[in-house]
Length: 114
Image 1 (cartoon, helix red, strand yellow):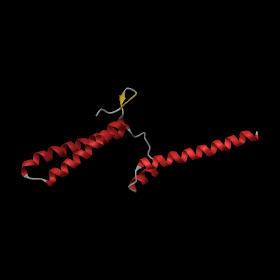
Image 2 (spheres, rainbow, N blue to C red):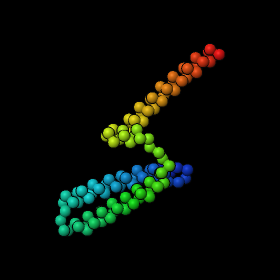
Image 3 (cartoon, rainbow, N blue to C red):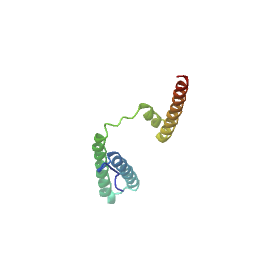
Image 4 (cartoon, one colour):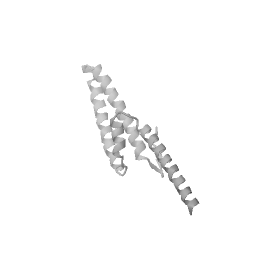
């Protein structure tokens, strides 16, 4: 699939996601090839390893384009705990909405007092 476009340019984040998908596929292929390894498929393993290195190089190149993105330590810790970052975002959005509502109520109360 084509990477998404952003302002007429390919989206580096979408490219990175696609490259990571390819990387995971290559790792899986290598695991299967090594499980069934014999001298006849050594060239296929060699080619897959070369492709894997190319994927890592692509990830390295793309990460340079995404250095401006800062990920909060809370999110990294959440992921390290094996939890889904989407759940973190949903909880965060809910917390912000509750805080926003509380501020709105306070502002309305202040306006009534003035």
